[in-house]
Length: 218
Length: 218
DNA sequence: ATTAATTTTTAGACTACTCTAAAAATAGTT
DNA sequence: AACTATTTTTAGAGTAGTCTAAAAATTAAT
Ligand SMILES: [Mn+2]
Ligand SMILES: [Mn+2]
Ligand SMILES: [Mn+2]
Ligand SMILES: [Mn+2]
Image 1 (spheres, helix red, strand yellow):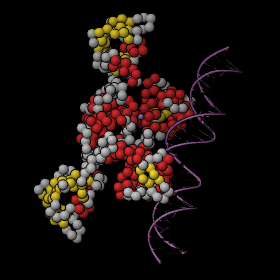
Image 2 (cartoon, protein in one colour):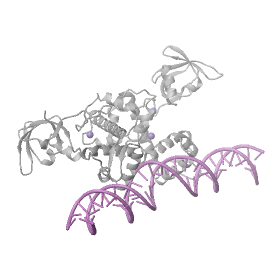
Image 3 (spheres, rainbow over the protein chains, first blue to last red):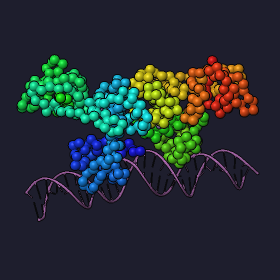
Image 4 (spheres, helix red, strand yellow):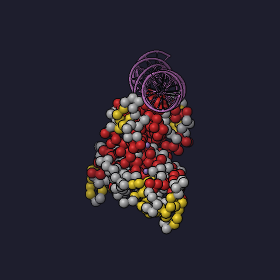
């Protein structure tokens, strides 16, 4: 089907399209892929040849229909494997990304179908991100960054924006986990740091933290 | 560590060393890898540079200590994944090879350690082949081909020599499975075909079959 | 509207892996 | 021993993917 490198590019473009809906720039993609702009131009041309992206010189790229389908399929596999690693093999949520990054490229329809069933058709990965179904449909979630809430409001922690090990370990250390309720007691206007209630205890968190935690209000 | 291609070569050399203990020839390796002799020579040089094989022109290759360790590690991963596919995901034993061929290249010590534990430290894969432990030690088994037994002898079916889907499906069709007892009722001297007792029923099998079934006598 | 800074693309080169065709070495045969 | 057949290696080339350095296009600033 697609090469490992092509798949990683498709996934990167998909993720960047949220921030750059008008087209993903060569530099943004180079940054995301930890490579050089010239390499990106090269790969974009190949993806364009294969009709996986729409590309006009100097205008950035957008995924085509089949490009997006391929990207979503890889994301589905990535997230299912993450669930497997955490739920079945006892990995911590900050340890799964690197391995899932490899496992997502395994090619076998039956494998992913049976894995999905084995995991009991999970809807979200360990970081709260939605797992698209086999047709590529995402569960939509009305999530909001904790930083966007006001004093007195509360909600349930359902995801992280930053999922680097460092941030995830910070959350672990402070007993902030998905599913827990957080209510805002105070917001310091100077630096937007918050005093929150978590597990009945008060906790002070900086704006860097609240800007990377997704909350479900409803 | 090693590239996907290097790992496949190491594994192929390991397997061929059983048949060619004095050195694996370029052609034998080309055949096994479904590639051309010139490509093999090329790769052998690279492996030799990296001290993974001992190579003298026109003399064939042998694995070095580290080469053998690498090969065994890949075989360990291959067989553990096969167990996972059959025991956990419900694959049939003739469906696992292709996928395990990909999964064996995933790089993560923790992954394979936890997978081993999750599978409850299996000693054999779905085809009866021994799974080396984390130090590379194989369980030795005093197995013998069914074709080597004489009339009146019996034993337990513990492995297959040929593990192509075709052969495995033949076995399934005739209810020959690992763990079952087989006793030899008659051997036709002309073509070495056998009349065997399996599950209390009589079954006629050709020499092609008996030459690919491993039996534990003891 | 020029000029300057930034972004993007091209040109050329490199590695890993593969192939075909030809040369060299080895093994087999008279 | 000389010839033949087979095996193995070399030579040269191609693809995928990457890089650096330089050119071209776009964007921002005077
Ligand atoms: Mn990846
Ligand atoms: Mn995730
Ligand atoms: Mn493989
Ligand atoms: Mn096997």
